[in-house]
Length: 357
Image (tube, rainbow, N blue to C red; front, side, top):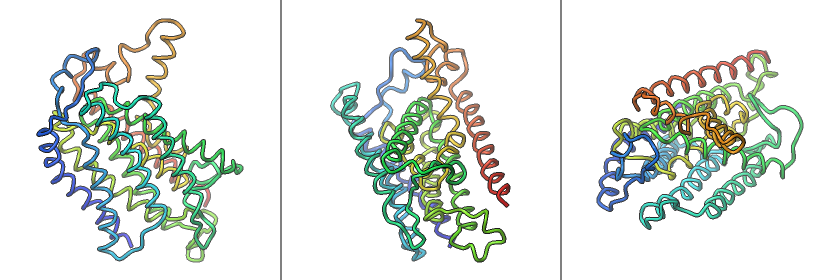
């Protein structure tokens, strides 16, 4: 049963390691290079023209790796897996249109704000509505109308509020990854860690699933998740694909993921959290994305209220660059912060399960 997780990760890794340089050549030949802000750190100006839209590589690699693992192992495809992949691809398509207009049409702002938001809303609503369908023989749908931390808790919020909540999560994570994607390898490396955490969570939930309550030592501590093992397969495919992409995306980056990649990764993270019933835990597992998003909120809020800036520049990573930290130093230290968030998040996940015992 676990073989498909290994196959998905290895195939995803191989495809991006081999496929990304081919994409780099294609994008460079067409002249699809990155636009760099003039008000940013001066060191970034040398990156102008670096191929972008690299998210295409790991989106395709993840999808191929998932289906290839199913073909190799003969295991069935699940609705939960398809929904997360669909959310990732849909958000990636919105990002691709934004990148395409920005780079190919030479319109620096890309998609107009209303059009970009409309695209994200359409994809997010479609995911949220479909996630409440397709009940299995235990009555579990891919998503639940209850809020969740380690498992579902509290009262049922109803389908309408669930769609609003799911949209908030999807938009928040997509924009969080998008804001983090400002330094070579930063968002990619951080995403690898969170997808690794979700691979572990999926495996643990499968082993302690309520569907196997008859064989568990303590059925009271079981997880009521529709397709936990398949969510681990998706997370493993994403982890492997991002790892391979990181080889080419780390400093000095040969390619950037662009909005194509950042919106797709944010969508995938939100989808995994919703379908694995760990929605609020995602704020801790993806702590770096939350921290960087909050730095922008604080900066904008402070400037509008007082006319003063808290940071030299937002998002937060550029503040430390302007303080004199090298790009690599910022990235590595932020990776350490993200690693600590994942360790604490997984520790809380395990402690919550153990407490139920």
